[in-house]
Length: 157
Image 1 (tube, rainbow, N blue to C red):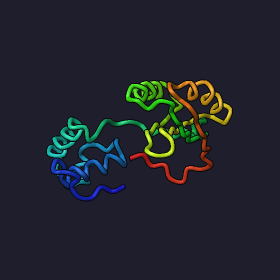
Image 2 (image 1 turned 45 degrees about the vertical axis):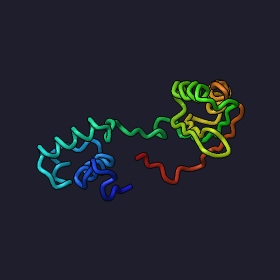
Image 3 (image 1 turned 180 degrees about the vertical axis):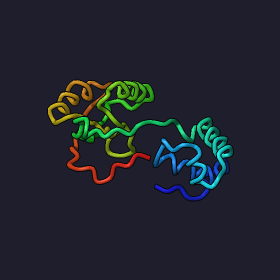
Image 4 (image 1 turned 180 degrees about the horizontal axis):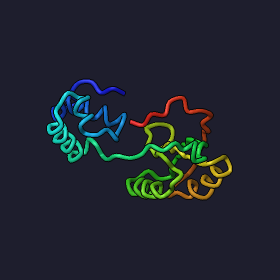
C-alpha cells in the first residue's frame, strides 16, 4: 500500500515517504533512508525520531516465515459470545492475548462478534487449540472454523 498525500496536518510528504520506505524495509540505515526520501541525514533523523515518539512508527521487528517454522496451518474462526457487555468483551480480549496460536483477533460488526486468525502446525494441533483454548475463552457461545487453503496475499501494513 502506497501512502499518498497528507493524512492529517501532522504529516507531510517527507514523513509519508519515510514511513513507506521503513514499512518495506525497517532495517534501512538512516543515511540510505535520507537519500531515498530526498533529505539530508540530520533532518531525516529528527523526523524519524518524531514519528516514533508520536506513535506513527510503533517499533521495528523481524518478519518471520511461519511456513519455514512448520506453522503453515491457518484457520479463521468466527466467534459468537453469549454476553457482549463491556466487562465481557474486556474479559474475552484479555484472555485472547494469552493464546500464542491466535495471531490476530478482530471485533466484527456483523453476524458474529470476533474473527480470529489461528496458526498451528497442522489440523490436529488446531483441533487441540480450538477444544482447549478457544472454546474455553470467557463467554464463547459458539464458533465456526474456516481453514485457509492458500494465502493469496499476506502483506502486513
